[in-house]
Length: 472
Image (cartoon, rainbow, N blue to C red; front, top):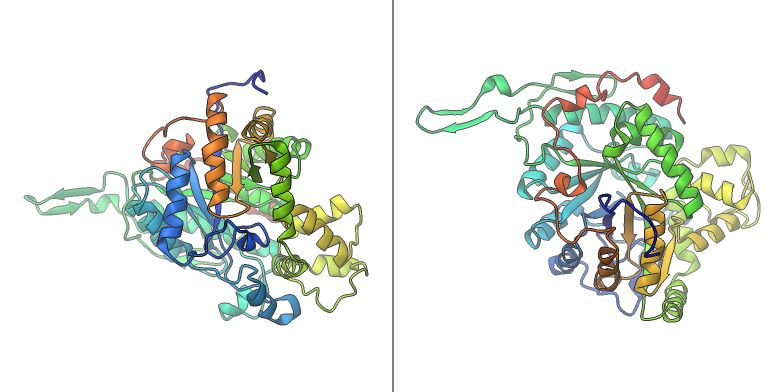
């Protein structure tokens, strides 16, 4: 793969995929012999942060959900007993601890537009961005299931497309608050007594279909203007939302052929939303297993696969699909109406239909697909550092992605193996940087620092949302 022609000015984006809990996204990862057990301490996350920064990763990113998986059998007992992502701590304080141990690594957290308010999100992330000197990203999600709704006093989770309609206005409101302060509003002149120029601090006075918020925000702009926006929508409506807002888009591509096709479609969708596709990074999720030989790596992968139990898949499937499988015949196909009623992660449902070849799959089909896919259908790059780098370089050079969201099979060893062995190989080939490009996350991602008001000029405001509502 060393002879593969590529533009060395184009550099791969690397993101660490984290959970504020006892395991990674890989089912059963907490059972791995090399997994550390001090996940409720700051030192655990600071060690990961230092490792990622040593490897020149762009970003450490925390996925999150707002409820314990308890839809299977309407009970949390199996989740707790088997450690199926039972712990879910708030990622923001953890980001703060990681920021204190690093100087360049970007830090991203997931917060929901369905269960928080725009002003709260705007102030929260603007403050984090200042305290990390411009290294923060917000992963925008609409949440998944009724368990999350119940934790916030709601009867049920909002319908899929309605969540995105609401999220569009949520982002308009947040972006408006982030524009409250112009870049040169602060004066800080003790002699004249002028703290800031009131003509450069603005009320938002937003009144919309879902939100009303006056402002102005009480937090001035950060070194990078405002936090980077991450999005992961892959359904029709979710893709439209990501195309409008996402600066860094997370995707799940099962193989390179599908990745090349969907990557091109996403870039086209970004252009159709009136934005420059070159200024939007698309990174696909993957697992890596690195060893001294390809044979040893395969043995390690088999060991890792053996750690997952059927209950892991069942519990997590019910969580992400917002559907209880416990009382269903294992082999009975879902009816058309039952398939439509799956209101959680509809993109995952659609992939099961596509890859099983069945319009009406059964619980068995979902579980078997989940076992093969490890829930998200992440590709697994396993082998020596050269083998893993070959696969990653091929995806990157042939137009499958701009980079990778690396999910470890165990923590922190999965990251340590990758940084120690694969990163130097990628650097040697000229597809990954050897040093950070700047101090802020935007600089290191190659994104332009926005001035106050830029988002309006980029066709974010005033977009006709009617076509977006029909995109799904």
